[in-house]
Length: 291
Image (tube, rainbow, N blue to C red; front, side, top):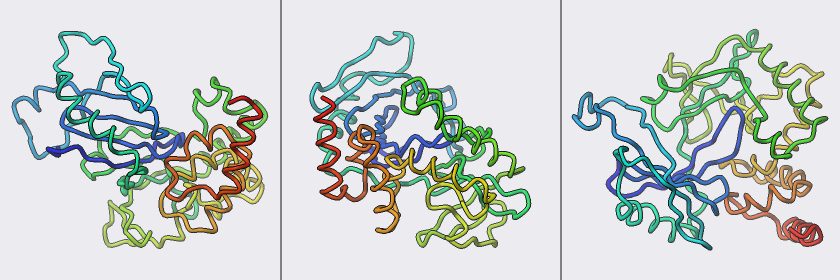
């Protein structure tokens, strides 16, 4: 673990929630999906960590909710079990809170989850849908994989998606999972290409991976409309992805202007600011709606 807090981002996948910003210190961290509201977590030491057993091996940590922070209200703590072995408040304030107070101008943080797990098309044997990612190869054996998902229960319960659209996207989920029968891990390189983890001598070109986390060229033609509905609905989240070209960002921005609340909430995490015209339209809509 770094002695100084490390600031980076990772994609929360299956379902894709967005690019999660992380401030990581020894035994505590802060996470945010919008760059404004931060959840503070503290990790509990395991016996392996206390006694330095298998020091060179990745050991998953158990994190507990410690509190929250935002620039307006500052830090709010939550009650914790006194038996938990977590860092004290002074340590959290000196390492996490102080970093959060000075990091707003540096958002979004660099995306570091360049290890990717893709569901593979059963006939084409090519990557179809991104289902998981990791920042280090040692993490891969500890990541649980399930069917690919596009919508979370929170999206539905929070009225972030209507029933008609939900049915369309769930149909796409079903179709994609039927098209796959295996998964594979890759390490993405700086030019967008990737090397296979299980077969390091195999190199996959960038165009074989969908920039919007799905490879539409592998879908059945009848699924294209369902795919377009998903991309439209996810456009505010997809705008947080790093490495998209100007044309792709413009395409997403046109869709995202119809999702004013979600787009405005995530605006701090866009690698490039929204176009002024679209930002103005969104601000006017939010003002009219009293939001």
